[in-house]
Length: 305
Image (cartoon, rainbow, N blue to C red; front, top):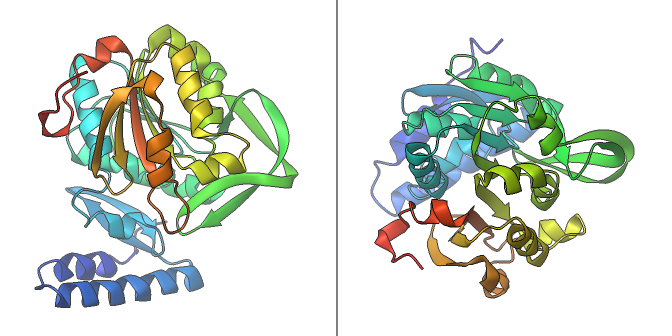
């Protein structure tokens, strides 16, 4: 169904990167605004590239644009690439959306098996299409939370992202522990969550996996979105501590390295500077058990603590 999707926006956005500054910035902003507006109006999709890998994305999806920001999401690639070198097992991608994160890892040479999990119907067909030619990728169509139940939630979709909010219709939630029980013979090397505030609930439903296997975690921490779900970054840190995680590596969501510290030191000072929301960066946080931290090389060769 995606055979005739145009790649023109991708080509024009790519060509604009060769223009001199500040002309490049003006052309970029004009193209970005034009295509995003068209996407919201028409629901049109375009073809985009991650190296040699081509996927389809809605015109208003951030993946159409962030690929040209050199640091954006490279922190995720850095962690996944290192983890796949010293741990075997699945990379679990919770909130896989249209599969852009899967394409990013494959284009970066990360060939570990991936389990991509997405609950929103609006992204599911694109996720299936975009990963159909990629090797060793499994898909699950479900929402994850702290337990198995059906609760009153609505799905809020905006600018290529979706999040569960309090609402009237019943949404079935599955815990990651129960989902992965069907794959008990598959070790979990890394767990990535990008669920717009549902991240702690996903981890609360993965306690058996976290304690038993200590996969390296890579999580989006937006304090405002966590609060919308009745949670906080302090609870996130407490849960990691209870599951015997040792160290945190921290970036802002633009990929700027902020530092590392013991889990016991928490995130309070970082949250004060990076609380998230529409106009403020949020945090990308990787969490490591002690054995994994000793094998991890932070950006710029920062000394391990």
